[in-house]
Image (cartoon, rainbow, N blue to C red):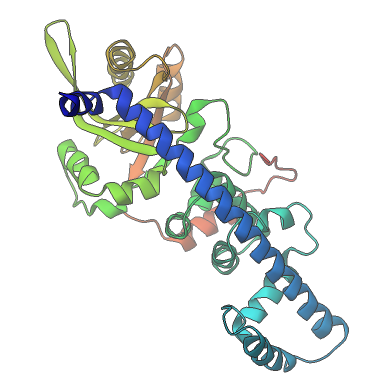
Length: 343
């Protein structure tokens, strides 16, 4: 009887949400321990980098001293990795890059050494470095997640899509829609031309790990063609997710063509139904995301002008855009003189 009771409880939405919250608390605690250790290591590497910089650039010891220093440190600390000549040069390079930047120097200490190296070697401007330093610190990206964001030109796409002078998206924004991008890269789906909507849905479900790399780690998959019964009819949401940070359900509708105003009405119905029939008392109102191949900004603005529930209209691409072309387009635009950061 007890076993049956436990089984029944484990199937309830209350238990599932309870488990999600406990997992989140465990992950948070584990991250805090890691962050403390990581911060000390990064601080050490920066101090070493500063010392090497001062001896080479100020005292003029010469570059050859780094090889000797690497050999002596490895002998003194055989159980510690990271003291190769190459790594010592990297310590000097990162210190030198941020030493006079009071705004970015503290951000370096919030990320792992590997994250810092990835940002240093894969970005060009200080604005791009700041974008990834800040966003990575807020989003808690893994190395794999950070690499994907760089490979898919998130900085260039974000800057080209913004009508604001804010440099960095901020997940702590009170506007729930700020958690979503204006455009998503679905290149990992491997879709051919002229695909039906069901192919996108099935490809996303088959590639959830890659999907979460693009959409964010806070998403938890809840169902495909999620059925909601209203009256005596069944309605199906293309994809349903739960967002752990926003603590709400996220309904995703997939469209293979251009955005149409009637999509909003359908999404509003789904969100109302989810709030009334699926949402628990401790969860926030459901949010909608309509993914279209393209959209007209004026049509979107008018379609959403009287929208009650929060709905985001975003576009997607199934092929990667050449990063060099995006950079050229970005550089051709006037750069804001005094952009705002979200820190």
